Length: 287
Image (tube, rainbow, N blue to C red; front, side):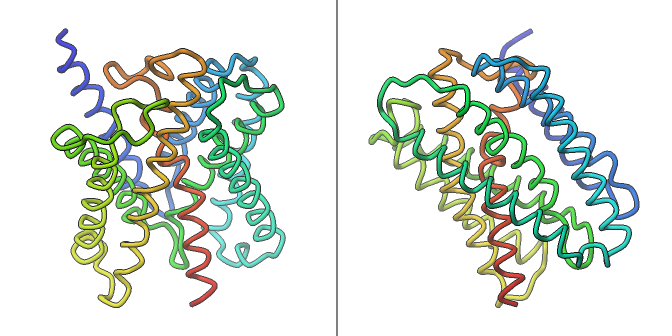
C-alpha cells in the first residue's frame, strides 16, 4: 500500500476513535472515554520502556493500577458530586499535580542538557511516572468541571494541538530558515513555531466564540490555553524527540503506520495536560 495512503488511513482511524470516545461519552457512561485513554497509556508505557530499555512488566502494572484507581475515583466523584469536596481527594490530586510539574521541570532541564548523556535507572522511573503515567491521568480530569463531564473542553484542546502542529509544519516548510532546536529536531524552525502558535491563538478565538460559546469577557481563557498548547506542546514534542535521539530510534513505536507510535501522536498533550489542569485550578480558585 502507498505510504501516504497508509498514513492517511491510520491517522483517520486515530482521530475518529479519539473524537468518538470523547464526544459520545456522557456523565452516566464514561467507559469508552476512559478505556481508550487507558489503552493509549499502556501502549505509551510499553513504548517508553522500549526507548529507555527498562523491564516492561512492573511499569505496565503500575500504570494500570494507577489509572484504574483514578478512573474509579473520578466515576464516583461524577456520580456523587459531594465526594469531590472531600479534602482527601483534593489533597491527593494536588500532590500528584505537584509531582507531575516537578518532573516536567526536570524534563525541560533534560532537553536543554546538550551533553551526550545516558539516563540513570532512577531518572527513567521518575520520567515514567511523572512524564507518562500522571499526565494521562490529568488528561482524563480536564473535561470535568463543576457541572460534570464536558467533551467540548478536551476536544477543543486536541483541536488546538492539531492546529499548532499543522501550521508549524506548513509555515516552517514555506518560510522557515532559523532552526529552533537543531540538535534534537532538525526540521523544526523558529518561524514554524511562531506560525503554529499564531494560528492556534486564532483557532482558540473561533472555538471559544462559536463552538464552546462562552462569554466574550472569558475568551481570554482559551487564548491563554492556546499559548500554553503552542509553547509547552512544542517543548513536549522536543522532549520526546530527545528520548528517541538517545535511543537512536526514528519513532517510539509502529502501531500507527506512517505516524509511528502512540507517544509520537500524544507527546504534546501529555506534556501540556498538567499545565492546563493547573491553569484551570487557578481559574477556579480565583473565581
